[in-house]
View 1 (cartoon, rainbow, N blue to C red):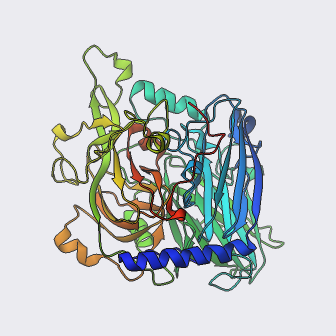
View 2: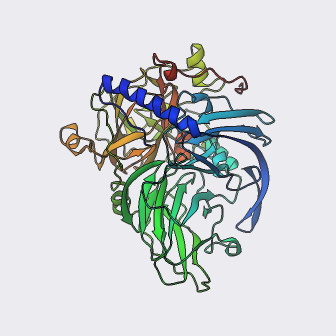
View 3: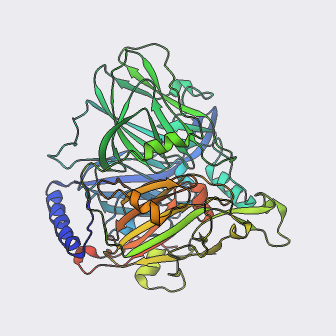
Length: 568
């Protein structure tokens, strides 16, 4: 079952009833899964060096959560690490359960060292692959794991049942403490050091020092079909992914089914998931599974290494075959992939728009005040890097969450004046005047009434440098109607909107020097952050928050806060 939205007020009410009935049918076979997550320091050796990495239950990557659509998860998190932590269940709709969403100071205060918090939420109308990760500083570099959502009991995939299922989680590894890396960048105002390796299921693979003996092996039998779930859990890098000599048929993304299409290469931004079918139809042998950067920011440093695993046919002992990978800056291949997605079933796309937003997003530069030490202004020309949406660089609260302030009516925590359009119109993807490079700072949110339909034009900018931004919206899936390059032109680009079978995603790849258009219905009360999923950018302020009010019905109101909600 896939979530659909209304395009009129009447059908919206009817749809709410249908969803209520479908929820009742889901509950009939639903289970509750209880898990204990202990966040702790664990000795992890990679690239010849041992680090005290922060993990869940001593595992890197962390535990995989496997459920059916309609099931409930109860996850008791205990923080035995020395850092504050929260856990975000990336892509889970969290219908009326915003208290369980997890982003630090957005829906909760962090779990302090020695503290605990129990996350309770239900999977509703989602099937496929999602994931969970820390949402506090850079802890998600090592604190992450998969969420596999099977169809509810008695139902099957909308494609032939595969012979096997495999999980591939792509990550990013620093030969250092990631918290030290981001703290150093915060002190200097410069870009943080790039990673030293990418990983597949926590292992760098054969092309790195001290790594070959632990390279991940994925066994297959000749002639059989595997469902491979691919997650990009990297902190700061979009990644190309391929398997030597094998075709990949894409069947799902972000826990929504898509019309199948075949490709040799995937491109995933951090936060995105892609489910593919792969038939083992090649001569018996060993074939590299490989991933490396899609780096679209001209001149910006990036990790140019390649992570590998081995697809291993039964009884094969030959040397693995290496696949070709796209060039690091191959935007054409990235675009061909991202524009191939279509929803499997015809969705009901909202057509009556209540809020039509135009949001610019990109980097910026803060001039350092007079007498600031040079060591704190190490971005170009003695400045500090920043980022913004509509010229507002988002600032997190520090002593209460936005959700608590909204729910309890506490003033002074945020303002509701996030602009619906940029304060100045300019050539967004051209040569931008230096006078527009410095944004304002603030905790500005945008309010939405329950049930209102929202369209957002996401417009990339060329301030300092342009790049592809993976934009993630918490609490919602949205339809991607179109994407393109240059400045969005409503007179000509509106005709490109796909209102027939647009894909349903929770993270959209905003093209370098380009735009994307998304739509959703605000049917989930709470406070929901929309941010770039390159963690270096969210730290610089590339984010905003939607505050969605309660609806009139009993299933349309935010639940009361749980008694163990952490205090600041």
